[in-house]
Amino acid sequence: MSPHTPTRSAGVEVLGTLALAAPKISEFQFVKVRVDGEVARLTLDRPDHNLLNERMLCELASGINILGEQYNIKLIVLESAGKTFCGGIELGEYTQRRVFQLLDAFHCAFSAMLDTSKPLLVVVNGPALGGGAELAALGDLVVATPKARFAQPEIKLGVFPPLAAAILPYILGPKQALELVLTGEAMSAERARELGLVNWLVPEAELEKKVNDVIAKVTAQSAPVLTMAKKAIMGSLGLPLRDGVRNSMKVFLNELAELEDSQEGLRALVEKRAPKWKNR
Image (cartoon, rainbow, N blue to C red; front, side, top):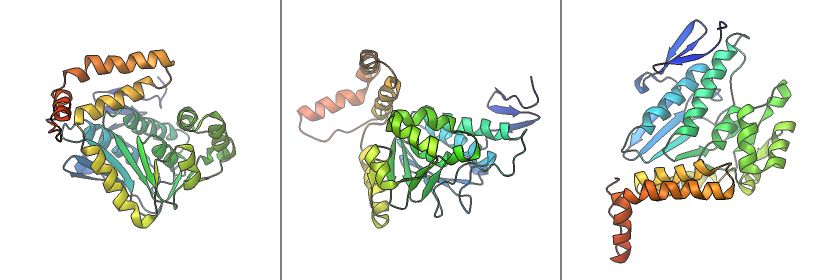
């Protein structure tokens, strides 16, 4: 094994001679965590531009993994402090050897976002560049203001964004993905809304109200049904249509049908009343 070959064991990432245990939430420095009932908020808070360093990426991964296992949480919200949502990965302080450690932490953070069973709402009220744009792309739902802009400028540094190269064609289509990656030019919030990268575009003065409205609509649903609906959608991505339908029906018939909440939903419909979820 080379000196910088990453391995993992028992929740510890071994990167060269440095072993990074997943930090506890109480130890976080750059990601603030607040849990309010059924909603968990992760706030990127590393002045001035929320540049992603190794520690911050480990905190993001750990936070999402920990919160994703909490039964009472229905929704995770990812937002930022400051005027920049995220300026991307901080590469300046990393030597050629240490950059492998940074990229491994990057992989862990984005894997956590892809793999979490909880719906993930991303709030963008400023530039989202490089890794920051990929954070937004991995949100299940995205609310943005006109201050947001999205760019993958890595091509100008002689590299390309491997995650964006795989994710963006699904969201934007191959032509738009190629345009963003090959030119490195920024996309406006308005254009991102048109192409489907952003779900809701609202004036900054209405941002808090819109975020609260989306939170209310999602958390009004049954927690396990939210998880299964996301599983059915994400599990069907990239499959031929018939295979995707079979995958979705498998989740519906083998998992959803056994839930008390599914039976409660049908009873409430027949009885013309609001359902009372037990979240099981």
